[in-house]
Length: 353
Image (tube, rainbow, N blue to C red; front, side, top):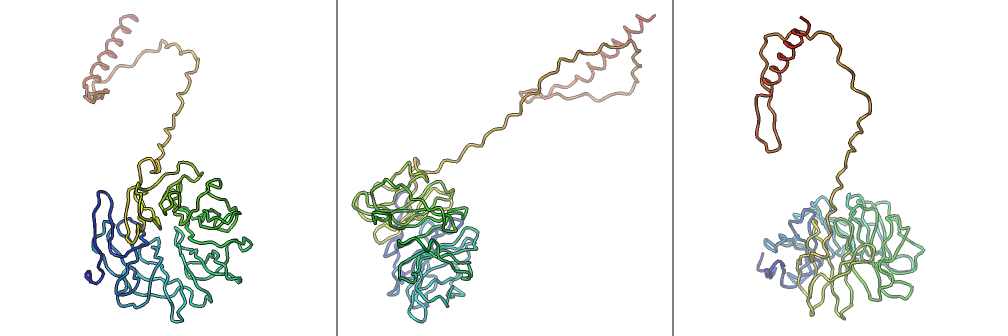
C-alpha cells in the first residue's frame, strides 16, 4: 500500500514535508493526524498520516473517483470531502475515518458543492454552491444536510473558502471588494454584519483560516508576486509571514489545534511549519483578584471585669504546632500558654487575699 502511494517523508528541522504529489493538509481535532489529498492510483485520493508524516494510508483505496477538499468533523470520527456522485456532479460526502460508510450528504441538492467546513459544535456545515444566476455563494445547512439557506443572498459578489470561527459565531470567507479585488471578509453566522479584514491593504487574499483561539487569521496573499501564507490579528494589525521562503507557492493554510503550527501546501507537497514566536497567540495571564483588607473599626477594647478566673483543671492538653514561613515546625507553645494562665491565676488569688 505504501509503495502505491509513493509518498516520501522528509524531516526538515521542525517541519514535516509529506512529499510526492500532495495538497490540502488539515489537522485532526486532537492534532495527532493530518488528512490530505495525494495523487495515487491515477487519481486524487484522501490520505491520512500521523502529524509527523508517518503511517500514511489511503482512506478509501477501492474507491475509483477523485476526492478533494477534506475537513475533519469536530469529533475526529468523520471526514467531509468533495467527490463526484453517480451523476458525475461534484457534491459533499462524509465518510468514517476508517473509510467505511461513505455517503452523499445532500443527494437531492441540484447543484455542485465545494469547500465544506464544519461548525465547532458539529451541528452545521457551510459550503459553496451556485445560486439561480450561477454565481458561487455560501450556504449553511444542518450537519445532516437539512434546512439549507443561502447566506447574504442580496450580496452580488462570488464567495469561496468559508471557515467557522472557533466559537461558531462567525464565518471568514474570500470574496471581492468594491474594486473587484479578492479580499477576506468576516460575517456573523446568520449572514449579517459583514466586515472586510484589512480594507486598506492593496493585495489579493485567499483561503482564510481562524486560529484556534480566534484572535488571528492565516491566509494566502500575493505580496511577493508568489502566493505566500500570512498571519494577521483579527483587527488587521500584526501581519507577518509564516515562512521566510523566497521561492515556491504556498496554499491552503490550516492551524494545528494548539495554535503553534500550520499545515499548508508548498508547491506539490504538504508541509507543517511552526508559527513564528512573534505571531503565536499570547496566552493571557489571568488576573489575580485582590480581596481588600477590612478596615479595623475604632471600637474601644472593653475593660476586663473583676470576675474571678476559674481554676484550670488538671486535664493535660496537647501541644500546639506552629508552622512558620520556613516550613519548620516549632512545638511547645501550648505548654507556655498554660503556664502563663496558671501564673496569672496565682497572682489574682494573692491580690484578693
